[in-house]
Amino acid sequence: MLCFFIMWPLLDENPTREQILMLLKTKGPLAIEELSKDLNITSMGIRQHLLSLEKRGLIDYVPKRQGIGRPAFLYKLTEKADDLFPKKYFNFIHDIFKDIEKNDSREKIDDIFKWRKNRLFKEYKDALSEKKTIQEKTREFKDVLESKGYLTSLDEAGDHYILKQFNCPIYKVASEFSEACKYELQLYKDLLGKDVNRQQCMADGSPSCTYIIPKTN
Image (tube, rainbow, N blue to C red; front, side, top):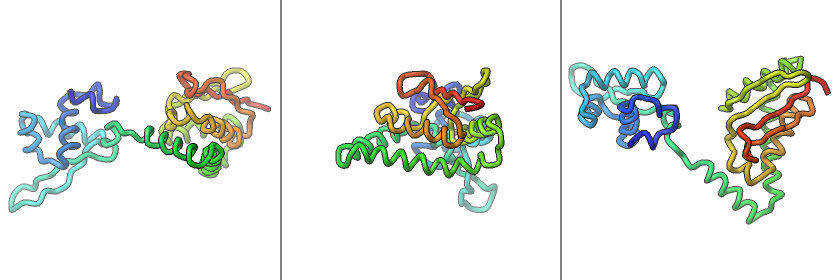
């Protein structure tokens, strides 16, 4: 079934739309008539599915060169749709770190994550620069993380805030190279100016990375 090849955002979708996405992925830009023939669905039915996919930002179209008459279009996937298909980036990055450790040193791994922490600090610092209170900084930081693709939650409990991250873009690397988690925690401390404590970590098998942010030091 085609749905097994497509990532979770479409698993509850109309299977015909998944088939359309798969055809556009494997055969390139296609006209409505070509999709209609491949799926044995009327052109009107194909148009309805394409309209739904277009509204979700998953497909786009370009004019098809032809003679005199009504203009035709070729439909193609957007970058957003391409992200629905599984990729092996994590394995690739993990293998690179293993090669660095073997051919250089573990210290080089530490350097890499330190450089990453410093780069992110400069990038995120501007977003928090105008926030005066820890409440404002923490809420803004949550928004920054979500803009980077993190799924997060923020709660208040007594004298501290609880920030949770439910996904990790470098989870596979972090589960073997603890330097990733070490410098992420340091990044949070530097940005928020507080003695942030990580209560749980996904790299250790927890369902989330949970950070305790004190309101006062």
